Length: 384
Image 1 (cartoon, rainbow, N blue to C red):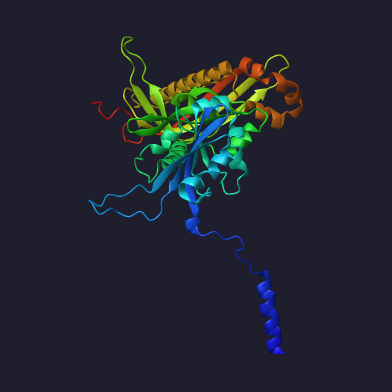
Image 2 (image 1 turned 180 degrees about the vertical axis):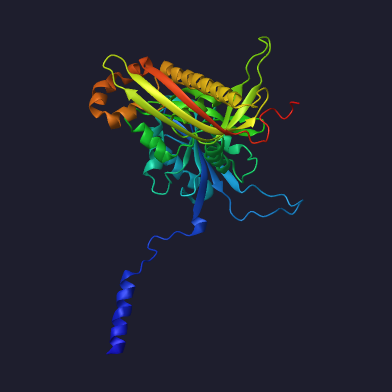
């Protein structure tokens, strides 16, 4: 009977084991590393994809390394049909589970709602929602041709530029497919996306594209992007520039720098039937990373330096907010905050929110806390 029990247990075990019912061999797949979308006609798009090229080895002459990827372009009325045409070039089915970034040219982003353009990627079960989205200046497909400076592919480089740029410099947003969908399906469908331009040395992300109601309406400078990230609690580490106090009106003031290692922002709307008021409180904690003109020999000098930083940041933040008010674009998420915390009021204000936001009174209060000068003397190293 013991052998019968063992046989039954073995049979039961086989019932719960899984099998490869829909297996696909690796030689049948083309792993997509990045994609670029350009609308070449009102009813036609161009899809460029960067495909991983396996098995690359050093060449016989001089040990030159071949490119680990190949770029393919297809054209169609729909993104999905253009995706299926990739197999006509490679004889392999596109595999989207390793895609790093999707690039969209600024002209297309200004004419076509982004969620409609990216619909295929949201429906495809292989595409990761962590895939980053970038808006490019000019033709998007040409960015896949740019040689990377340090990474193996430019698509991976653009992904890292967003992630590390946000974490270490605070000058570029990092937005995934999931975050984009969440923003554009919210009560106020506004967001900023990384804006790529091509320079002689390669691709850089010097600012951000403003997305309003799902379409691009303009761009932000690097400094404006930095301020928006600070207002939305995404800015952590970076360098804040502080102009020296003018001693001669005919000369451009030198600039000192503060390294931040923590910032916190709290935005509180003050409800008023006639006019919206908004209190913004920002805490900046950092160290002095570069001195050009200031001397911090006494405690009073440190207090004065912190006051200068406070006033400069309040000025910069207010200028950026006023710019968004002129554009009637709520990229700081104020409307969504009202929806979550004051739903009844939001229902009354939603239809006229753009105008209310543009007319709102903002009060900004910055607290600057300089914890260290990073040296034993509180003056420029060049000073005697």
